Image (cartoon, rainbow, N blue to C red; front, side, top):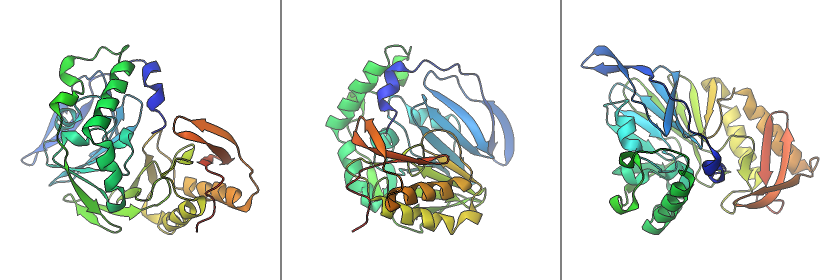
Amino acid sequence: MRNLRFIATLSLPCLCLIGFTLSVKGQLIEEKLPLHPWFSVKKVAEKVWCISDYGIDNIYLLEGTDSAMLIDNGVGAVDLKSFVQSITRLPIIVINTHSHPDHTGSNHQFAIVRAHRDELDMIRFFGTKEMRATMAKTMSQGQQSVALPDSVRFHVTDSLYTPTLVGLKEGHVFDLGNRKVEVINVPGHTKGSICLLDRRDKLLFTGDSFGAPVWLHPQDALPVETYRASLIKLVRRQNEFTKLLPGHGTELDPGFVQEQIGCADEIISGRCKGTPYDSFVGKGLVCGYKRAKIAYDPGRIKAK
């Protein structure tokens, strides 16, 4: 969520045609992604792409042999569905790692969206007509320096429906065909935040559960101790992933999990008193440990 206020200051990225391989009836065909004034794409593994949502957040697309998975879907400024369909022709399973609108803004473009069951109420709130209208106004103000064709813009009047929301729980496994993806609940940033583990390529898609800093100071965040318990769960499975792919920023190595635990320990023990931290969702304190940082509410450190 933290990058939304910077939209108006972002400059248009220089995009080039990007090559990828598409499977059609068993044959490999080299194709080119179309130029786009908003999205840019980077391949992070075979049949796995990171779609930059104009530098605001990361959207991930994975292909199996039978279906594809879209992990988060950005702020909803433009037509994401058509862009994704220019990369894959497979049926798409849409997942929200959590409810915040910079990760769920394009939900309205899809018929079915899945997320942890503890996030569904907030996803519905952010997906209302009124909230989408507010987001559209914010985005139109931020697009003043971006030459967006009208055909790719977000139009609230054209998207007044709500997708069917399907609740997920810990341990659910999606089989995309030669690629299985597991849901891991990681309460902290929100109650129903999830990571998604691609077992085949050992990739962990983390949403906003990792970053610099991780936000635990918003009202819907949980205590630092609860977040630490989620990190311990991931450490116990650390041999199952070789990369962390966060919702913002660049990929991280598995060692970052231990550093995040170290940062939480500094806060819980009181060794780090924190320095003032101000964001558009509120104020808190921030502590750092090695590469890790956590912004937190000093009244929500201990789990009850």
